Length: 289
Picture 1 (cartoon, rainbow, N blue to C red):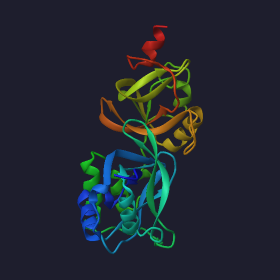
Picture 2 (tube, rainbow, N blue to C red; picture 1 turned 180 degrees about the vertical axis):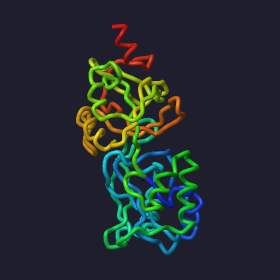
Picture 3 (tube, helix red, strand yellow; picture 1 turned 45 degrees about the horizontal axis):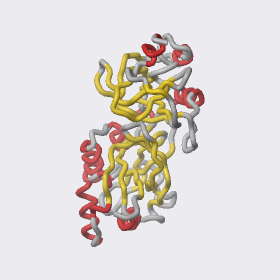
Picture 4 (cartoon, rainbow, N blue to C red; picture 1 turned 135 degrees about the vertical axis):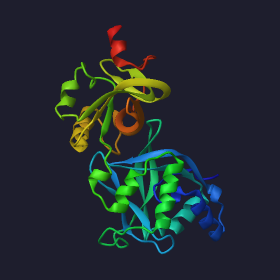
């Protein structure tokens, strides 16, 4: 495969059968698109403001408030597959390529191409998709164990309430009993529980950093009614600026708590250095001095 273009799929291109059917009709090799794994597009919303004659629907992603996110899959496209995808999406007249920043299950952030509906192709109001198109997206999400509630919200034309991830996983100075916990409590969490995330933890001096890894990081999971305000404040504390080099990146991870597996926001360390904390437990590590 030549090219190696990273691409974030969130609509009908999640369905491998639909992609294969299109490629065969175009005389192209469907193997030019290779899935790398589930991913999330932070601070965007899935909407339906256009209807394709080919599949009876067309999803789009639009910038939104903090706390909303779009689930999908990070793909790798060959040079040929990128050209085929351009044709399938009607680039640049119907959909247009853009560079976005997505997070993968390991807490890493990647720059990737995606396609957004152009202003001239949009309709003025919510446009429900056909059951066929909805099924393509739903099956694609389910095959990657990704939630479908964001799709449900898009089909229903719901606003932010249907697209937000209201939980935040903390593992360092925001933990109960730690120096910045009081700041977190100013936002009146509606839920709190002990939780773990599959990752590794580093000692960075007076605070820790979560990084991709096969370990287990112990922390706390908080739920908020207004997660937008919480994340706006935490972005500043953690030195995160979307699309810019940052101290931490805000990502979506799966965490385990007494309530089961949940998707939550957290902050992953984005620099080099640090000393591993084998236990994955910041408070226990600090207590040992």
